[in-house]
Length: 431
Ligand code: SF4
Image (cartoon, rainbow, N blue to C red; front, side):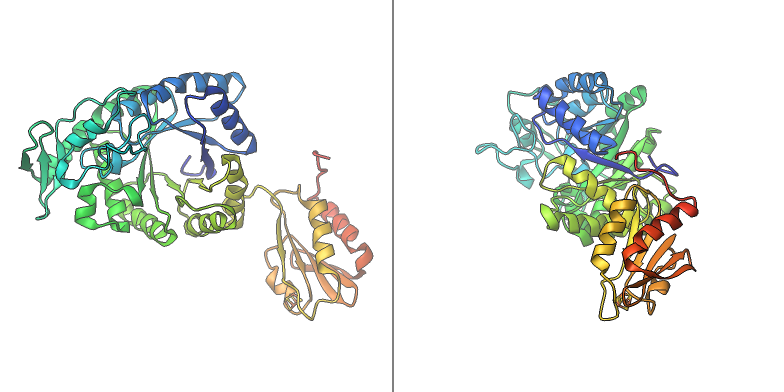
């Protein structure tokens, strides 16, 4: 991904990762729908242990699709997963000291139990260790917790004594660097990529206190980790800034590109609107958030998050890529809404043309109601089908009018002939 490679479509399984058969079957359905990277959540050690078997079965079924482990709270899980899959996603807000979700989770890292609750700011990072249930391997105790005090000076909290020590920004950076180093070494040794996946809803306390839950805070959260990776000479990175608020997501990514340029960074970006919803709502939000950035030339891989089976996300993703013109995978149609100037049956014509030409990927065909606006609006179409009078149609190749006043009863067939004459026809292999 990245550079001149096509923008990749990815999605994430929603099965229990310990359910090998279910996860493999779902991953294969996603791949067959067109998913190019399959992400799998690994909340606990048992899940990560099962990743190897899942990968083995997917490969045995003949699929080479890269797999991504989605990790939030436990660095040990990320380090283990990095030895198995092609990419590991970590969330800076949850991954390191100062997390806002400390103390959460038992078996599932994202599940809050009644007694474990979310740690308060004053509880320090010790609550994170307490909050881990017995079903998964506990993470090694951290060297210390790191927070920024009200006076905006970072502090380190001793996990045992709870004593707070003010530290400099450099000491804070060093602490994060120390924590990330093992993962980066394992990733380098195994050729595993890392996604620094920032979510608007889970920024770290330090970022929240310094920037609030703003696009700037999201950018800083990602860049902070990217800088540490660079200190370790690790550049096999992808960055993402996601939010359920499309405007925040768009602003954050635009700002990230600006800031990366200023710092001489050029990492591929993963785009997505989180918790976009189901049905039309989810599709619209994803199209607005992801589509706006793609239209700016921003983005290297996309994930449409809708509350449906993951394979349902893939056609939406391809639709967004097609609509923004960044990756053409099917025939494109331009057609007007019709008005009183339309003097032939537009809807029937459009339907018939689509049925006959939908396999001509990359071709752009315009169907317009009249010659008043039609030819001008279809300027970049390869072929045009334009109303010319009552029951009559003109056919265009590019901007050139080549067949005039064709009776609408034979106009679609004439259009197909024109496409054949132009050398742009191919038979539909699916039929
Ligand atoms: Fe009306 Fe012609 Fe515009 Fe279609 S192209 S909406 S028929 S004016």
